Image (cartoon, rainbow, N blue to C red; front, side):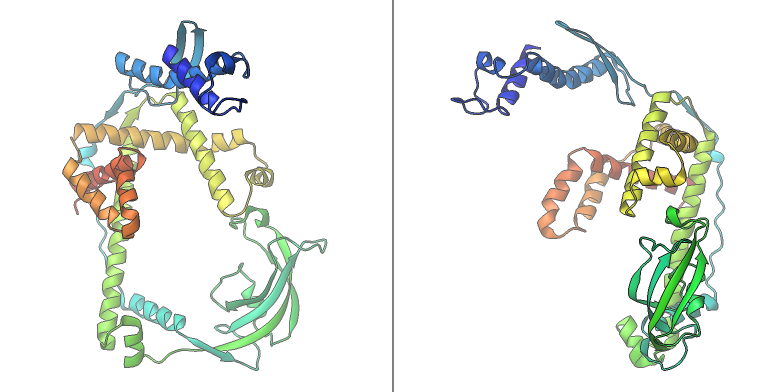
Length: 402
């Protein structure tokens, strides 16, 4: 412990201000007179435990797969007990009989026409219309939502809000209420939000909207001529050639969707075939991560976690209970795949990693490439994630083909 005590004393001396001494150069006997008696020993313990714990794992050849729970038995000499979940026994068989049917991919003429129509809509122009609004028109409206008592509701107010009637960009039923209104017309109506609305505070809630139409515009679709085709494709081509390009893009999209579908179905089969006795500590840690994921997701929408709990009338223990099966499934898949990689000897060579890192780095601006390369080559999280991605690609190719 002596070397850790000296290191702790030096680090603490760099954080305290003692007259007559430079930070980091305070003699030990002077430092002890300016900090709490156990401050240095406590910090030395914090420095020592991770290193000694790692050494103990290597010595005892323990494959730890969770954070350790450490209990100090004595400090002089240092003795501690660490309780940790170890790599569970994993059994998996029958995966070589997995068959995932490849669906036939076909692009209908209707799908090509729908894409073409969408392109034309996105290139459409609008002109003011002195008439009542109808579906397909673009309108600008002021609106605000109120509860049953007439109080305004947060996040339901907008001014000069543009929308194309029929595109369903607002809550279901809202746009239909605007049909038949002219510029400067006002109207009040009620909308009941869906039970699965993405903002939970509005789910199944009845809201009164008060609107005023500021503008009505008629959509003018572009003519499908040579000039228009060149503006969207960047080259001169016939309508038939344009449609052929659209068809090829649709085929590519469907191929990617089919690839993802088959991979996900394969992974579901692996979960069903893997036999793993998952330590409870690992399940709890996985649930910790899932709750953190939920918090980050909520914060990205502007909703605080405490608000979410209040609106859903749930406690954290309820959330953990709801997600327990998913946590167990994630862990089963993780361990099942690791066992599969081992049994099938699916490995990634240094040359393959070097090539993939070069590809990833090349996607960044030149001034950032050195930093990105170092992050991927240091053997840390990004390196492991990339290596796992390559292993998964090899696994899918072996069992599903290209």
